[in-house]
Image (cartoon, rainbow, N blue to C red):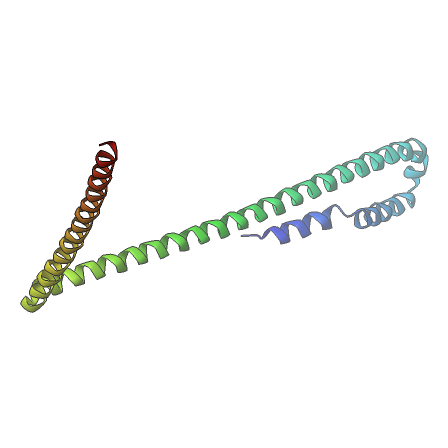
Length: 170
């Protein structure tokens, strides 16, 4: 299989104006040596010049199209490389997330297995849960007592104010 560079080099070699020009000059010199060529030289010379002009025009077109093709190819390669880098980055991110989730799941399973396998740890978990519940209940009781005390103080103040108002009215 041919590489793109080798194909390019072959095209350049085939369409190089210097190479083809030298070949045409060699053929022209060989033809000038023959007598029949001298008789036909003037009309064929005009035709030959027209052919050379057409050839030069074709060479220019081919080289411009080759440049366009090269530019398009390099742009396509650049975009493909950029997309490849993006895809690799996304793959790494997804792999990292999957690994993190795997570790979290393994930790949860390990913790649950420890709770199930050791009776002492079950008791500890139960004790911790009871302590948490007791602490929460104790906090709620304290808050309720505080509210009751505050409400009682407010009620006493209102009662005192009411007494002082009633005494002042009498």
